[in-house]
Length: 123
Image 1 (cartoon, helix red, strand yellow):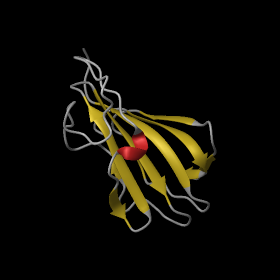
Image 2: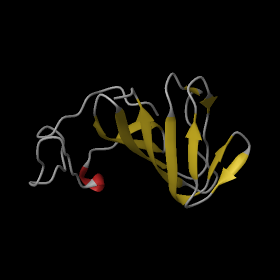
Image 3: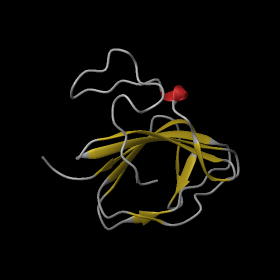
Image 4: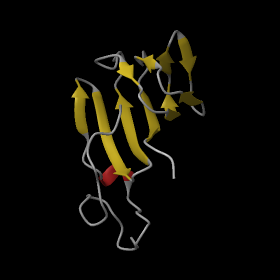
């Protein structure tokens, strides 16, 4: 789930006309999804030197293809459905934080949508 590519204002589909220096606004559903694995789509929502954002849609019965290792902090918020992570079930409204050095492999039986952030550095 970690962000790998840089996105800048003016080059990402869905950025609104009101983007200004130091601020990017975009319509999430206008961002082109990338298939991570069958039934799992990721939208990369931008990146700064400090963090990157992403939205992931899981179809019912899918599992992240590999164990996700965290060199830095990662956080996600379950928007809909249910994510099973480390044997725990996280429904809508659940906010999950992983410290650096942790790992996980999320899956779902029902399908899910999660909004996440990877913390890359400190100011």
